[in-house]
Each structure stands twice: as structure tokens, then as C-alpha cells.
Image (cartoon, rainbow, N blue to C red; front, side):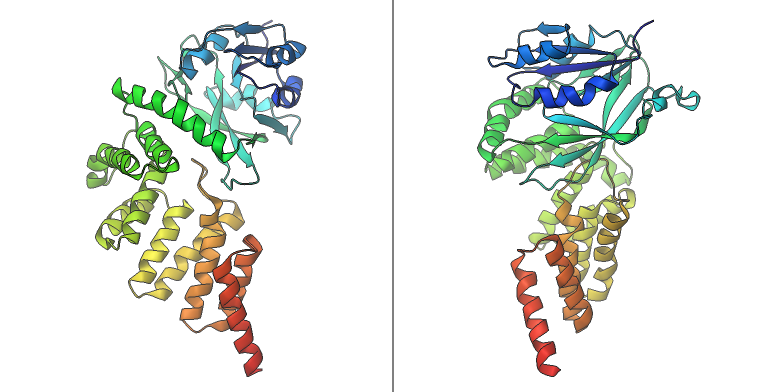
Length: 379
């Protein structure tokens, strides 16, 4: 009988973290297939401790090609992929029952929650497709940020419960910048030159150039991304592709707000919140916008909703974003807004809440100290 679940991995120089990853998944998979793309450390030796299915392939500057080389060796009904800097965490020992449940026969892909474990990154968790039913047309597409997809059928995605991924980001800022400058940007620009103008590629180029400090190129790529969605925005409909659309709308609305271009900010905020009303970054900018219009009480519901979504755990998990937009920033803005409205007790409460999220947030420290001093003097 064919194994149920095949793990497919690609690795290169991952000796410092591969064992942790494989130890986390080994009890849950029926076969492990690892493709190495040129390691010069002890990666291959560690891989061989866990599986005989270790293959070396030449790196072609194409992540999908490398993953497809691993996929070609799989024999399971389901294919699962993970990266060496990730760890599988199981909270329900029966989670695999979801793959074979009678009611799930129509599902051909499953997503997992991915959580960031890093001292200097504060990203929210998000759903990421990692399982594919191994039909003949299953394959990886995209030289960078590759995705599981089918050639002959639509993807029907479920959300796996009782299991999630932790991403252990151990890169320094210098290593991160070197990776996006020397590897990611050249791959993405080649993809676009070859006609792959998916929104995620354009937005990622904008993000990458921004991280590298090249604001002009960053702006140019963001503007190309906005051109791709212009028709859909004008018609008030979603474009065919929505990967990183939320982030793009946040970027353009926040940038317009900062430039006091309120017409543009309102244009993209009204469009974005029509479809993504559980995405805290957009809600937060909407609150800033309403406050700036001189309507502080009108801003309160937007800031409150950001915190409510965080506390209820019901925020949009389609793509990651900086958690500050549903914690520190709305809490601080509530404190500042209530202070503006001369509701001192509420302002104090929300400045205190801000400091629970971020104990070293100077504006909240300053205003809280002023308000507490005024309360003491009056008392």
C-alpha cells in the first residue's frame, strides 16, 4: 500500500537547523524526500540520518524546479513540504484524520498556520498552503515564493487544525538584506521580464527595494502593482489575484495619508475595507484618517476594532503583517484620542495598555506620566 503522506524538502547548508525540523516531522510522515542543491556543510549527513531518499540536484535559480525534483520522487497520496528553518508543532495527535475524513474528499490542498519565532520580528500568524493531494498534475510554480498548484483542476483548500508551523528566523539583518539583494531581487526581476507580472511579484519587489533603502525603485514597483489592480478598484471588484493585495492597499493608503493626500487615502481605504474589514493595518489607517479630519469620536471604532480583532483572534490571517497594527499602535491612538476628548481615565487605561504591548514606547510613557501627575495634583 502506498504511504499516505510524503514529506518533500529542498535544502542547502542547513546543518545548523535541519535536525530540529526533521525530528518534528518524522513521527507524522510515511516517507521523507530531500533534495540538496549544493550544501558544503553537514546537511547531507544529517538528512541521511532520517531518510535514504536524499538526492543532489544542481541549483538553477528556480525554487519551483528544485521542489518539483523532490515531488517527482513522492509516492504518497498527500505531499507535504516544509523548510529547514521551520518546525511542525502538533497539539492534536489525531490531526491526520482530517486528511482522510469522508467529508473532506473534495479538498485537494490543506493550509497550516505559520507563526514567527524571532526576537526582532513581530509578524502575525497566517495560513499557508503546505499539503497537496498528489494528482498527476500537482506541481510547484514560481521561481521564487513558489506555490503548490494544479494544471487541470481548481485548488480546494482546507485549514488544518491541531497542528501548526513555527518559523525560526535566525538571520541577522545583514544576512536578510544580502539574501533579498543578491538572490530574491534578481529572480523576481527575471520572472517579471519573462511575463510573470503577478501582483505578489510586483509588491515583493517594492518591499525588497524598500528594505534595501532604494526608495525610487521601491516606489516604481509599487506603482506598477497599483496599475495592475487599477481597473478592479475602479469597478469596485476584486482582481483575479489577491496575494499581497491587502498589504499593497495598506501601503498606498498610509503613504497617501502621510503626504496629506486625503482623497487618495480615502479612495483606497474605502475600497480595501469593503473586502478586508478584518485586516487591522487598513482599519488603523482609517482611524488615523478620520481623526485627521477632525472627527476624533469617529476614529474610536476603528482603533477599538483593531484591538478587538487581536483579542478575539479573529483578524485576517490571509497574509502576515506587523502585529503592532493591532496592538501597540491602536492602543496608543486610543489613549491619545481619549486624551484629546478630555476623557482622562480612559486615556490613562489605553496608555497603560500600550505599555503592556511595548514597555519602551516613549510617547505612551510621556503622556501617561503627564496624566498621572495631573490626577495626583487634583487628588
